[in-house]
Image (cartoon, rainbow, N blue to C red; front, side, top):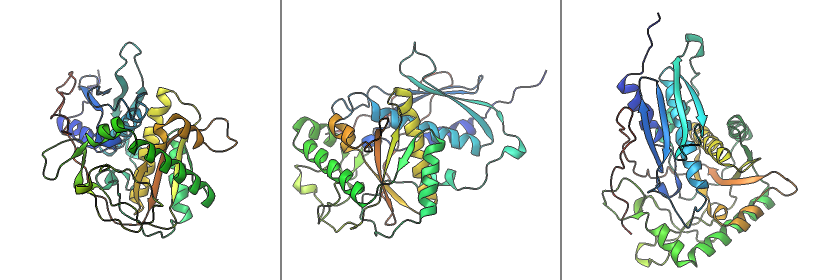
Length: 339
């Protein structure tokens, strides 16, 4: 009888450390993990306490976030020499169980991944809310990003100048609606953390970017109504480079695939020296999300806008450690960010 090879504690810890480095809406980190080393299974659950009822009532953005964490798990498993088998929504009797990643066995010598830099990019990827230079990204790099989205089950559309302006107008309209909605403003602000605060979640003030002096770039304004925290305006790039990540269907498993595709695109961009940020505002209003779809395309369900280019590195946001007990769900570490 062949002895079953099991992952050691260091391997499991490295996989979870990679998973929690994924981007999440407002840095809510809406995931929990359950580990069963005997079956070499890692379960990824939603975290009900870390949701956004007004911004994300259908939990679509939460699923994108969890999908990004699943992609990091897969990538880290391969990096550690394991073959991951991913199942999305594996048990309808457990609605909070969004995915499982089973380590089916060690990789063979000829299955070892090439040095594409993606795993190393996990730790280097940060959202950059600063102005970019406007230097055009070479077409081969854009093609790599597009291929990454396609390989993960989504599509990436890079619009022309007119299409970019249309998407920016929709984003600006959504941001204006958010700022005019007191409850939504309060919900967003509740995830803003004060300087020096010992918080594992949320957006630190130090990670925020300035407003665009020209008003062309509608970045999310976490400090709306808080003039004491507002940063001086700067001039953002004149020619914004955007990409629309979309799927052909809009089910829960499509959201999880879109999250994996999003992370694949972001890590590809990071490995090629690009900076990125996410524009999600238009996706939070059903009519604006529909309007963001590709014209004359019947099955385009927009998931998120990605801004990319060359520029300063973003300030990292905090991460909560994930140390689940074998066979048990991870506890909820740390309190919610204070308003």
